[in-house]
Each structure stands twice: as C-alpha cells, then as structure tokens.
Length: 156
Image (cartoon, rainbow, N blue to C red; front, side):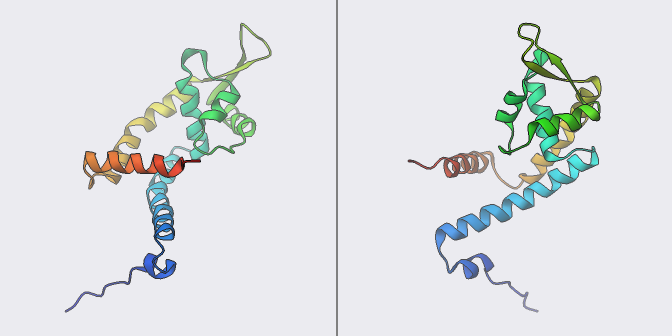
C-alpha cells in the first residue's frame, strides 16, 4: 500500500518565495523546540521569562546583578523586569539588596531556594537540548547556529 505523502505546505503557502519559506520554517521550528522547554519550566513552577531572569542573576555571581543588567540579558528583550523580579521575590527565589558601594543601586541575588531550583533544572535542560538535536551532527549544529546569528544581524 502506498503511503500518503503530504504536500509541501510551506512551499504551497508561500508560493515558493524563498524568504517566506525560510521564515515559516524558522517559526515552526522555533515553536517545536520551544514547547518541551515550556513544559520543563512549568514542571518546576517557572515561566520561560522567570527562568531566564534567574539565569541572568546566577551569571552575576556572588555580587548578584542589577535589574537593568538582568533586562539586558533577557532572551525576550521587552520583559517587564520589575514585575518579574517582584514575582520571583514573592516566591522566595531571589533577594534584593542595596549595593554596599552605592545605595542607589539595587543588587538582585539568588536565594538558597532559587539556587536549588536552578540546580535541579540544569541537568534535565541539558538532556532536553541533547535529545532535541541528537539527529544532527556537531558540524550541522555549528552551521545552524552560525546561520541563525547571521539571520538576526542583517548588514545595514
């Protein structure tokens, strides 16, 4: 029995315009690789934005990070950092402290609970990403990464 083949819906939808085909493939791929991450974060009681903020704070080391520094590192540039930090503080994942050198500056640090939460996510996240891209060679992954960076930064 002949297996039914679905038409190339992307090509059909775009009229085979290459730029549209690339865009639609990028959007569909992004959504497909994003959903397992959303599920992993939800299983730990976090949104993607909350997780990204916690990672930015962890990168700040023992001194923590400023709210503006957190915002600059967010994967989603328009994140409402103040509201995000309010929620993380309410959930006892972070603490805010005045900078000892400049009391006008607020430093955000991970609480013990926040550190433990991130530590519990680290290994499953690595496993998730490895499984998502296990079918691709390291060379393919490097090329894909290079092309994605290139797509985000077109020449002026």
